[in-house]
Length: 283
Image (cartoon, rainbow, N blue to C red; front, side, top):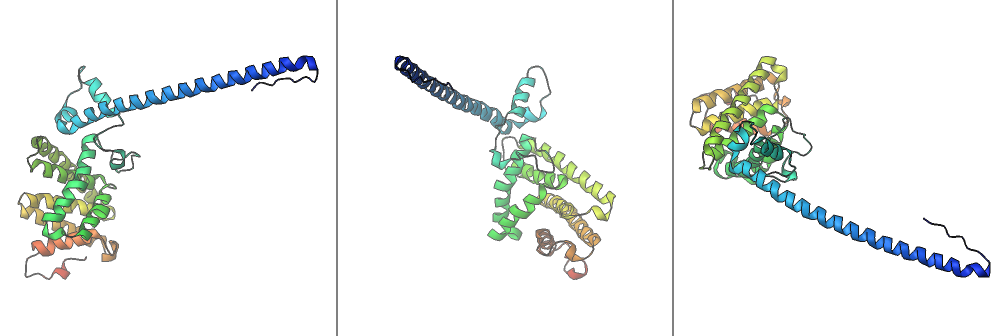
């Protein structure tokens, strides 16, 4: 800001007017320059963001098209730069609303795992809801998303269970990288079993909804391969865990986990037809 002294003498009036006009002209030109500069910077920022997004999508898309390159390639001088760019880029296969931008999940998901979790919600759940007689209906589909999938975000073992289910779905449906996802499923299943073993070893007080859901997911994986004996042992193990929790009210009254457990036992006949289910199922 510039202050201009105004004199009351007649001889200074012309000079004051000239100074005022010059100051106004300079300010007008300065405003125009600032406006042009802002427009130029804004245009460049948009253009750079679009170019960066295009490069990021191409790099991130390669994770799904060729996941082995991202997941298994050793760190050599040739690929260190590529891996660093892929890991550090804010742009990935999924939009920020379909990932975990605030790192609030129980486990930090790598890009491939983010894709697998999203695949479970957007592909596996609709398949279960459509083709599995035990889980048909819009209400069940909503519960699978709002309770089942959401619960997995709070527990590392159960979250790996959903990633396992996604890998099975991709590996058994002629996906171009089905061999990769079949191998990855083994890793996720191992984490599920390790988590379950640690929970059981820690004692009944560490058993919770996520632990039981993890066992049910393992039972589902065995049933998918036709190993109903192993599936039965998993389900009966889940029943034992519920018994260790104490009263049925330990699980909240409308627990979707209780519903799934009942469906597995009643519709698969895991207790046989001559057993009194109420004597064995405290749910």
